[in-house]
Image (cartoon, rainbow, N blue to C red; front, side, top):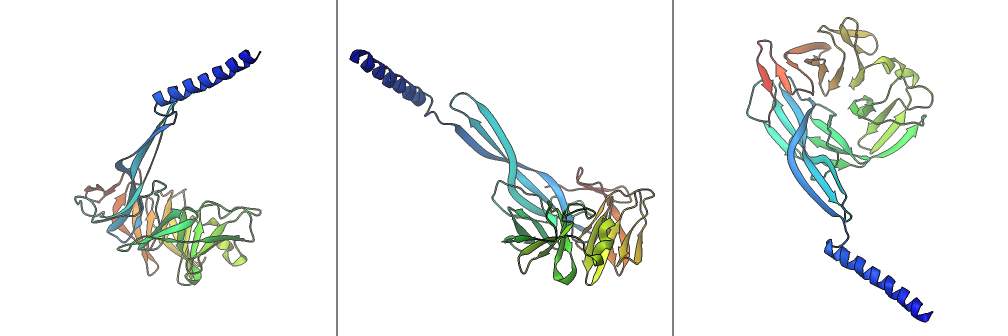
Length: 296
């Protein structure tokens, strides 16, 4: 019986030894992970500075491959090393007028416009802010709810009352205890989710909204006849004649109205003779048929 027990223990040790030797033969029984950066791509429009300059962003792709010790294989890919680019969309030029590589991280890269010269994106729960000709910096943000429970993912922020910024992405018409909008205070470093008070009920139907000083401007899109307009303080209507229009947004001091790029100055909408095809094609068309293509 003792001999049998010893033999059994010996066999187990021998099996363990064989396993170790096998692992050594396969370079250590550990996964082999390889990470590499590839070319740039995924360029999109972040916003418009004025009637000739546009800001785009792109990223550098990466590929991570994993070969497991037992013969498995997997791939993961995304992008990082985000970059902002400034183009003149009225004149065909050989690449952007200016670029700024912002981070070396492999995470998200999508940028949005905050003011005429400041752009932002999420950096975890904080905000990364970039101003033209300056270095991007991260602003720490604390979040709180005021009169609502269910928050939403923010993808738009514009200048608002009292030197703050209005933030939204969910539905302004959300019912119940859902938050409808949020207010960003960059000085206090707070993002407060709220429901619309009685004084702001009027912006429920807005497709986009912002403030200039003490005045609130509401963009309304009429999908039936394309006669969209901007409403100032719920009483002064600023007509925006153009083709069929199904989407629009405020871009700093500019307006993106369908394929048109417009400005709102002294309560008058003036649209450029240049049209934009949208994010799918980074091309701009002039009335004479000239095509301006954004290229690296």
